[in-house]
Amino acid sequence: MWLSDRFGLRVREYAGTRRSPAELRADPRGRADDLNAAFADDDVRAVFMSIGGDDSARILPYVDLDLIAADPKIIMGYSDSVTQLLACHSTGLITFHGPAVMAGFAQIGDFPAAEAHRRSMLFEPRDTLTYEPFPEWVDGYLDWNEGNAVAVGERRTHDRWHWLQGEGSVNGRWWGGCAEVLEFMKGTRWWPSESFWDDRVLFLEASEDVSSVEQLRYWLFNDGLQGIFDRISGLVIGRARSDTDEMKAALDEAVIEVLAEFEATELTVVTNVDIGHTDPQWIVPIGGRVELDITARSIRLTERVVD
Image (cartoon, rainbow, N blue to C red; front, side):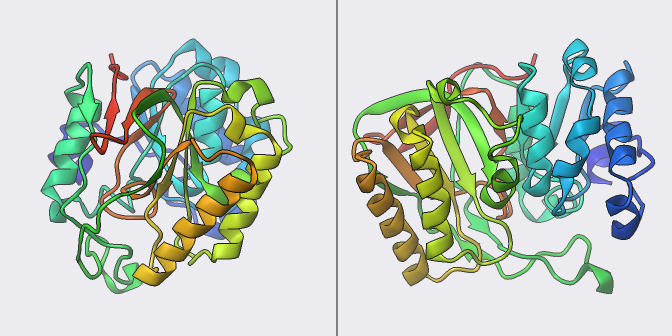
């Protein structure tokens, strides 16, 4: 409804859109066929994911990256869809980490600031765009099985970004996504080589499952062992879902401790930002150039990412 009524888009559903989770899990090739078909169709200019999941890495062997590179178009999703975003990005395509149809677009009526952000990113693009904290946010939805498809949970007042370390301003190209999903890709042919990390701003966020401090340490420790912190110019971490202020403080402390272990004490780091499993969420163009300015406390895209 929102895609057509508010944004004026003509919506086309593919075969897997309304299949059950069991049917989708049993047919990874069919899911890839939907993605390939969308990129093969000249009339389709954007691909929006319906919802996430937990096994989309299984479809990657069947995704036709040559086909995707031949006709670049917008592709957007988050959570489990990150595997597809990063695989498509490997062709040189800027891909968009942002709201899905069922989780993000369906609830947009509650968040006018989110609608404005999506217009400025995708429909009325600019040469530069400053990310602004959304005044209110939620970290969950009501039960969709009880007819609450467009309803949101408890509203909360924005609780500020946490600038943990760094100085001045740095810039690089966005890359990242849901940390649990990135774990599926590490060590595979879809994971970047060591030299890839130069000139990158890595962003991480966690799923709707409450992540422990130790889980965060494990993820970051693995990244440190790969030498990633020696190469990236900045680290951005999304708002932790369902966590208390005390838990968020513990997560921030864990980030600082792991980075210190890898002597990355000058790396610019900001946490608790509006990315991922929080609603509303920013659209993050993977491959787009971003500036982190710790003095001005600002995060800003510095180039147009949609023609």
